[in-house]
Amino acid sequence: MDSGAERRTVRVTIYNQPYTLAVSGESGEVEALAHSVDQLMTDIAHQAGNVDGSSVAVLACLHLADRVRGLEQELSDFRSQVGEKSREFAVLLDKAIR
Image 1: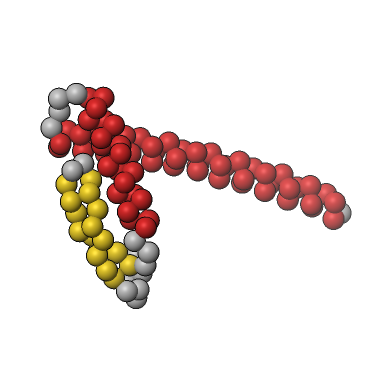
Image 2: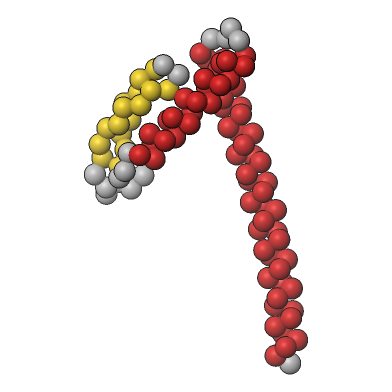
């Protein structure tokens, strides 16, 4: 968050628990993230059955960590592809210049 921006509070509810968060800039992004986490936890709770809120939170964290790891791998693969294409273009450009 930008420390120079105006800060204000936003109230969100995640898994039936209200939270007051300090945000800078537009609150819509934080509200959308909170809604996404709430939906994920609710879905997990319905699938998992009779589990407590802490277990639902841990399962949600594991799910999100898995998604982050997958995205990090995709980004790494993409960077490798871009690097390889850049090298190929550099060779072609070098040949064209000669």
